[in-house]
Amino acid sequence: MCIERKWYVILAVFVALIFALGACDRGGDGPPKNDKPDNSTGFTGSLYFSGKWDGEAGTFSLDLEKLQAVKLSNTVGSFLQTTGFESQLLLVDDAQNVQIIDTAEKSARVVGTAPQAFAAPNGRKYFYHDPGTGELYEAHVGAVGARLIAPDGRYGAYSPDMRQIAYLNAAGLVITNAANTEPVFANLLGFLKQGEIYALPVSGDFFPRWTADGQFVAVSMQISNPSTGYLGGIGFVVDAEGSVVTFLANNPTEMRWSPDNQILYYTSNNSLYAWNLAEETNILISGGANTTNYGQQVNEDGQYIAFVRRFIGGEAGLFVLDASADRTLEAVARAEGGVAALDWPRGSFCAPDTNQAPAISRVEIFVGGEPTDDPLIGPDTVASVKITPLDAECNLGNGVILYDVGEGWRPFTLYLGGNTGCDGNALEFDLPKPATAGHTPLKVVVEDVCGARSGEVSIPFRYLLPAEPVDDDDTGDDDTTTDDDTTTDDDTTTDDDTTTDDDTTTDDDTAADDDDTTPGQ
Picture 1 (cartoon, rainbow, N blue to C red):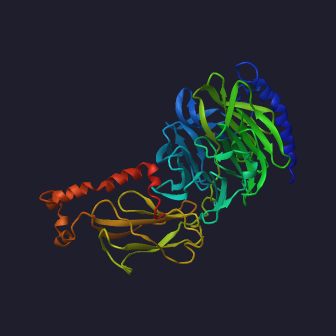
Picture 2 (cartoon, one colour):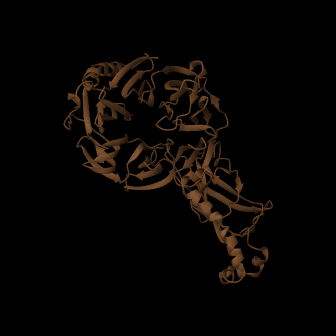
Picture 3 (cartoon, rainbow, N blue to C red):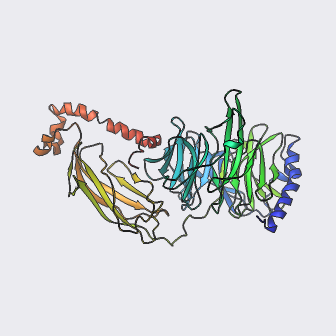
């Protein structure tokens, strides 16, 4: 494997920076000399960070040339990730709310609840895991509900083309296809000593990171020895088939690749390193006895590496290293709670203005296997809905079908796959039953992998609650809710209180709900 000439230059710079950055950190309480704020050194572009700017907390966009920040949200998050969908960021705040921040509108909305979350490359879906059950799920940023990926998994991540998924389980690393039907278990057991096992991390950034070309995956693992109480870490680079290419010891975490897939940046023992995959050489980027360096992110052309440096007194600042020259910028001045997380802007997953929205050619409700107009659906009625999506560009493979019966958007499915939308075939799902009785329109939309949506299609049906007598439907009294509110229908209102279905909607609203809504997805 060859290395381009520019990387020799970069690596030489890194060696010089060991003394300029790392060695200087080892003495005194102040920042290294090269880390003085400097807005005249030619740093360009912008990045996002969550923390404090001029004493004000929130999430910001920072202009590196002018050192000016614009507030996007009042929320501070411990994990920040740019996505490949328009102007959106994914943020996990201190209350474990998964938020989507719109950088253009400067607004934020909560889409779920989880200790860790990781967006797919298209920015429309994200992985999260339930720390209680240890189950790994995939959810949509605009709907309540989830797809179970693995009952024993954590830390899921899509490949750049979204054709594969990598995640951790108790045996190590699993790589599977997007349909999750062909799991491959990486053989990492040979790296364990006697009595050691792989332990699933419960916090921190342990998401596998794919190279931009999808050939390799970098992953951090925790190792424990139950008999001795030992807990350590090891890092691996495996290929897309799960075979080990190389490994790193000394507790490496927060793996990040350079855009040319040659350099793997990681943190270990409070310091930031660069591992050259081809030469198998390790370079210290930043570290020292008085600082903790972490949260590094590489910009899209690989020139800048931004990271958080926390000093011995607890103050944290955001530093940007120019890998093409001996320059370091303190972009956000160190302060208490100064910086919690950061990331660079990313390009769109799909090329702008080149994608056509999908369409829905037909939606039908079937009762007892027969198509039915405006059907009456009781608690025991066997009913389904058939949806025929169309997409001229066949971009529905990692798309979704969403529905709404008056309770917000939920997924019929979070993975379509194959030739969906190209073959003219209908997809069939169980008809969802709302929490309240009456005439309910079933609304359906199809969204492709680029986030483009079809027009909304609506089809009516009437739903009867389980506690409601069938005879009531024949009298029409049900429609005049006066009768229901008086008389013995009060008993049925007790049953209406058994509309703990409403309570289950509360569950759905707390996006940990997603764990409960797995069936049918």
